[in-house]
Length: 378
Ligand SMILES: Cc1ncc(COP(=O)(O)O)c(C=O)c1O
Image (cartoon, rainbow, N blue to C red; front, side, top):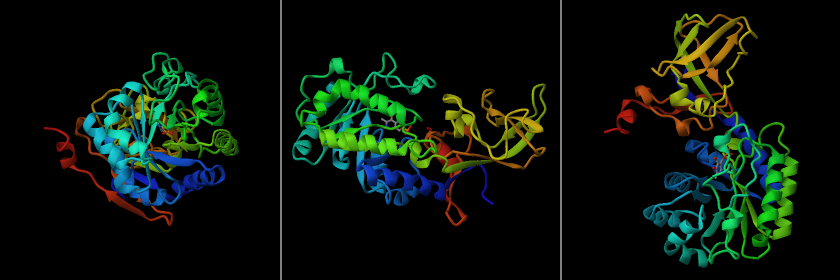
């Protein structure tokens, strides 16, 4: 049995997602890129690279990882790049998208030659200024005052020399309808650039929950075909979540049970703050195997971590059976925005990373220990 806490990447569920994404690529002609900010489990890159076109990065380190481990298209976007970073990125990336005209010009000396020779795609991220989400304001790049993407009012009449792509990213865990609405708004505002002949590619960003059961995959394929036919551009999508949605668990052990005046509390060896920070940041209640809401099943508990943070609460859950010290609990959908965001606050150990292969066997791929904690500090 694997030692806890442990993230277990689920190969079978990931293949299910990848088959859907591959169908979108094949039937629409789009290029799908894994947004590594959501999932950088590079032990799975050989598998993922069989199905989709490449990866995208939020900066130099992810771009290096994609270059070293994925070996297909390598894209990058960041609100700002340092000079040394840009020098290195031009050597390892196929596309670089800039967040402002000043960043584009500041780095022109690094990218221009390669771009004009046709060996590097250069894009500008634009802001369609259409919010389609109100649930998670911190994930809304179109919120007033956003620093993400150039607004139409700040765009030049003609794209700067060397720019051959446009990029927008506005969605978060959304279906096809919000994408369609956003694209129509983008098209209304920015079509003069698309029609100019200068734009060779359009990146529709991430946040597309393509592999969720209710996603309108045919609608997406139709829209991509329409864009390609009308403007003769390559279309890119860079989902993160959709690649590893429901393709991983975080398994934890109950270390103690403490009585309180509200609910009995389970002290777990996994932590929301350290191992699933989105539970607190987003916030959300992670799915947990064999559990229900409080009142739904006979035995109710509040799930806490063993950190000192009073608010390190994962949520309130109920179970059919009474739970005991030593029992294991399995949080679902823990491949995304988990391993990439974890930390060692309180000197907590990082969970091991394991893979559950399609034949059911499980193997630890990497273990972490005291040295990983110490090496980040000085
Ligand atoms: C520019 C960009 N691309 C892609 C993504 C991936 O989004 P998701 O994992 O929600 O699909 C993000 C997420 O924040 C992003 O900011």
